[in-house]
Each structure stands twice: as structure tokens, then as C-alpha cells.
Picture 1 (cartoon, rainbow, N blue to C red):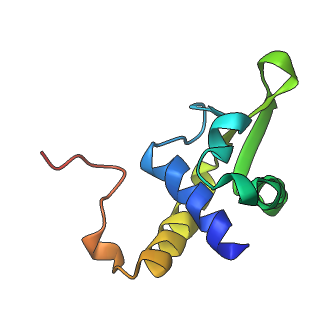
Picture 2 (picture 1 turned 90 degrees about the horizontal axis):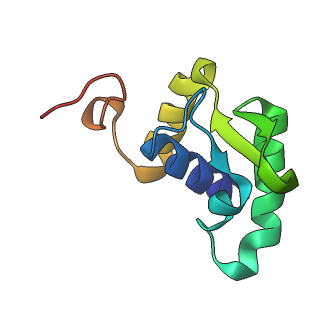
Amino acid sequence: MEELKIKIIAKMSRRRHYAHKMINFSDLLRVVATNERGDAKRCIYELYKEGFLNRKPGVQKEFRYSLRTEKQAEIDEMRCEYYGRHKEDTFNNDTFNV
């Protein structure tokens, strides 16, 4: 379950779905294989309950989600632990290195 949570968070932070930039529930489920969709639904709900995700109703009774900016430091630490990188080596969301 933790691996699924980190996959979901990684997809959202990689695409910068923070604060007002929302992603549909069905698009979040595309991260995982079809046989893990039930677990992914539970993980998304748990992430919402833990305070990592914002939720608002969208079109056709489908919720839309975004990451909370207050939890950005925790999210970066989770991603670094999962991918085995040091925080200094990862891409900083605040700056663009061109």
C-alpha cells in the first residue's frame, strides 16, 4: 500500500498538481495496473484523510485532487526515500534549471 501511495504522490508532484491545479480521479488511477485499482482507490482516500490531498467535486460526480502545499517538504522526503536519492540531487520544484 505504501508503494502505491508513493506512486500516486510521485505522479502528482512530477506534474506539479499542487493547490489549484487539479487532476481527475480516473487519471490518478492510470498510474497503477488494472489489477491494483481497488487498492489504489483506497490509497487515494487514505492520502486524503492523512492530509496530503485536497479534494473537490468535479464534472459528472467525479472528484478532483491536488497536493497540499503545506505538505510539500514531507512529499519530497517520501519521494527521495522511495527512489533512493538525496534531497539535494533531486529537482527543486521552486526553480527551473535550464
